[in-house]
Length: 418
Ligand code: NAD
Image (cartoon, rainbow, N blue to C red; front, side):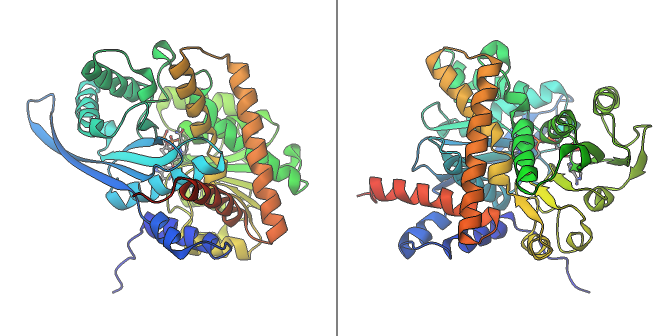
């Protein structure tokens, strides 16, 4: 019997990088340099559970590139977190930050843990200990974490507090995605989903698709997926399918998003929403729709499911939702991508605004933030679209060539030490 092939997010990230490099004239030594992360920290640490037992956890923080500025990237709590995944996510952050022209390098972190199995006190102790373990790397000038899968503003508040206690003074700019009460930014929680909507609708416009005749399916109904679904609905699209880890729901006439959100707030899942038919996660991906928004985890769209996908646009709310084979099949079918490093960059863009506000101790209104976000996302989309059409390359490769060139320019300006 054949062993199932182990999925490597880093293999995907490197193959995407190399595909873009093939369209560029770069010094091979620099290409070799950029293939590798700058530093990788693995920590093993103990946490006391509520029952008095001690449990050991493993966490990671990877800095892919520090060339364009302090590193920035989220922290994930999920049982499958591993070095390969964090390494890939850190590299994707380098390209995302460069594509958005934010003055950051790329990083990512995570702990292999299922946070839903921990009490609030256990989660707090785990977070504080992990923050302390990675405090050799994080700082407002050096490396600024943010939320990702399984973490939220409360987790960021505990990281900020742990770091601040060690410093002897409040240091809000050490993390972003914080609660408003300690220097969080208006609009941060919704920023990623809003960015997905801005870039997905920009692509619809390029293809001559009208919101009122566009059907949308969304996989994953967390921070990114739920807001993206709501914003697409507000724009007048028909959201026909959504799913979370427990299953999905389909309604050809369109789901009532405010009602669905209220249901999820009450029950914690979309699966048993009464106004639609229950479907599996796979059926969410293959539902009859025009725009598919994967907003869960990596590797969801593989060669098994890709042939059955009906969408004309795949807007990648998640990081790395397609395997290489899955993407190849969709590109051959003529599917247009809004690639992850563009599509979900709204989160890090507003994180950048939050960091700047924290350093200045001067805060902007929500409408100032959303206006700036819209401008940056629309400009980035337009640059990628132009590069893609001018060079006859897919949107991801176009986005990578812009991002990689900006990082290479910075390396060349700074020079290789010594
Ligand atoms: P989250 O933890 O808030 O939500 C994840 C959602 O995915 C949940 O609804 C969960 O039930 C669902 N899910 C998990 N496994 C699934 C599966 N196999 N099938 C279907 N649904 C599944 O996480 P999030 O912050 O929304 O992040 C989602 C994705 O977006 C990740 O790839 C993350 O890296 C990326 N992202 C997040 C942000 C951000 O600001 N939060 C920014 C950029 C990119």
